[in-house]
Length: 445
Image 1 (cartoon, rainbow, N blue to C red):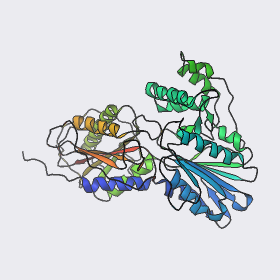
Image 2 (cartoon, rainbow, N blue to C red):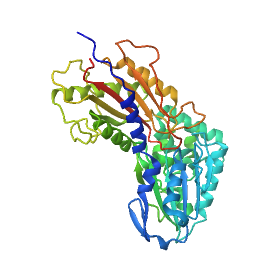
Image 3 (tube, rainbow, N blue to C red):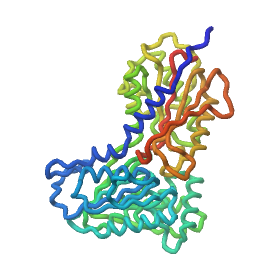
Image 4 (spheres, helix red, strand yellow):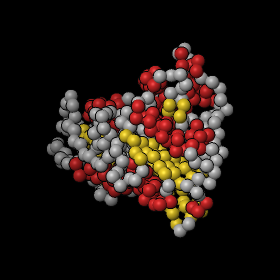
């Protein structure tokens, strides 16, 4: 049997990358969620007369802080009276408000402490009749989570890193919500007082309450109990106190303006228009890079088997199993059957999303490469390509340059290191985690 036709993935792969980051762009998402129509201000899902506010300020924190802050500035113009942003990369040159670069993704650094003090001072200076916009993206955790009273910053950092290694990043944020000072666990709401607070969030899939430790989401009574159990047997457990929560009278649930679903949907829709059948494995693949690779490879095989046995029209908005709309977690049994019926399309573009179990944008290039190596080992078919599309964009001093990586199975041979291509984008676009994509042309076997 002759070899299948050679598939050159660069064009569709780059299409997926570009449209994914554009679909989840924090700048555009905030502009869509924050609009001024004459004298009516739309903020998320609320509509209020803008003239009711004496002052309008903002705090933008996280990897996309500069983009979010710039969007607020452009939408509100001179009505925006004060603001502060802090994130891993420099802000756009056109931002007219103070910006603090905080390159370390963990709490406890001097830049993070300085940014937190500035943010709390700004929030505390607002009163009844004022509006505070809290613009959160992954990476805000490094600024919002101050150490407990009497703790050294290094000690606080080590506790959070240990919990992340032992239990995962969400548990580390849970610990910070209960034990931390600063803005986590709804504490920002208590500092602001009577000012109206509206929170817009870029989510990575874990949920908006974990981004930045939930500055405007008060603690629930059960949280201290769960953290005490989590830290059982450690000195940190003794610092946990029961609490009924820190309520802020004008704090409401955050509005998610963008997330991994937007990135995947944008890429899938664009590829569908180019003849690919776009399908989803899961928006929240968890575990190590090797675990994620196994889930993703098995998922793409199940989707392929279903597509071959009962072809679905090549549309990214199908509601069937494995479609982009279903968000179905799949643990399938791989099949090596050659399709007897091939839909009138180029093949399958299969998507997933993951954070590789990292805290708020801290995944590294070696985790991405570990995923690609593992994926290359478990791919069933020749001429299948898989890639990891990083949406963070240009985070410095972490060894994970902007862009995406591409692996190829290639002729049934698996090397020690997959062939890798990278693409780059301007810094500070957004950060909704890592979007995974694999191309399975119908000629693959």
